[in-house]
Picture 1 (tube, rainbow, N blue to C red):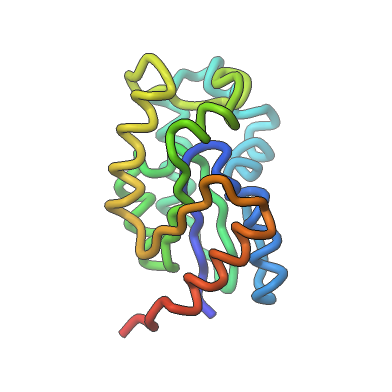
Picture 2 (picture 1 turned 90 degrees about the vertical axis):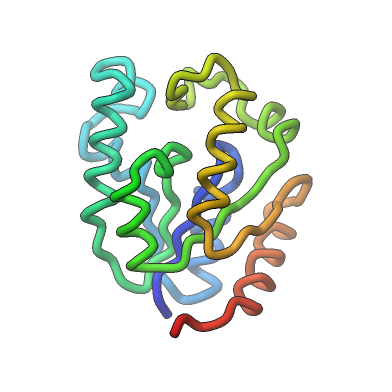
Length: 170
């Protein structure tokens, strides 16, 4: 099986559902946020504070643009969609799946944006971030699965069902 790339807002479940999906499909799992933290030796929030959003996005984009994996479920950071080159590479190495949440659920789940290391990208609040990113997520996605209001188990089941209906690439 080719790679599956999970995209979506912070708190959409990419890092929670990803390992469960990987285990179910006998695939490996990679969380690009954790990889960025390991490489830098500090949290995303600390990296963003230290180098600024632009430099952090360049670092994340470079990682995504050069990522080369096989048979892996990849959970990306919520800001992955700001890297055109990174998203192009991800689309070449796998199927991109958007885990969608409605804005109210994102607000409820996210909590402190700064503590999570969320990139504002010129927006002043979660509403602006949500509006900007959902447009990009939809544009890049091969498949969208709405996980609003679902438990982890139900979200996994919905994702597996949607993947079963996804046609093979030519």
